[in-house]
Image 1 (cartoon, rainbow, N blue to C red):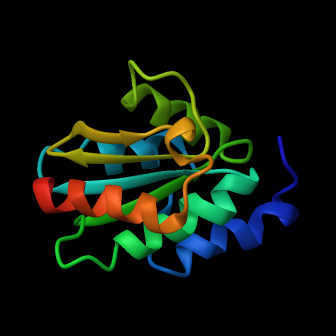
Image 2 (image 1 turned 180 degrees about the vertical axis):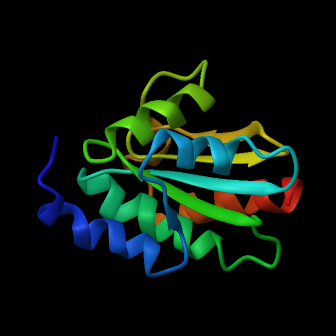
Length: 137
């Protein structure tokens, strides 16, 4: 568990851009259990690859012509109940943070695990997500 004061700027990096923060399991069910539309989920993290690659990549991708209807985030190590619930929606993938997932009509259709993020530039991550947005959004 990380001190909330430490993570506020990292969380705000996404929420100030328009991502909705999900703090409870109920919030996650309301956001990801939707039966229609597209939702981008970022499992935020304190890890350096979240700051250097995942958050900027997700924000760049969101500026694509085709973009998800909703953008949400949970913070691993902070929003424990929300993160645990989000990870249920990400099964059969193991827990990963940071991670970025795209849901369409309540189904997981595209997923970037930490090993897809780590060592890749924000631009490469954004391109990967834009291809998914063009296909599913």
